Image (cartoon, rainbow, N blue to C red; front, side, top):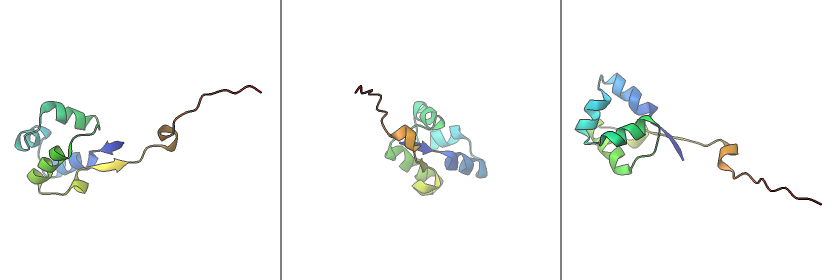
Length: 82
């Protein structure tokens, strides 16, 4: 599953808040913030703490990104000989 935190980063810019300030106020580990910057999944409890600090909902900070059909289907490299 792919996720995007672009909405969060834009929200922080609009509120003139740094990622470091958010990390401290939401009590997020530095490694977790790094995962978010790399567009990797984090736990719902982390997202919930961010929502509480920013007074927003999940959809305001994260977006599901559908995988490309070619990426989501397993490749079958079996060659058959007749």
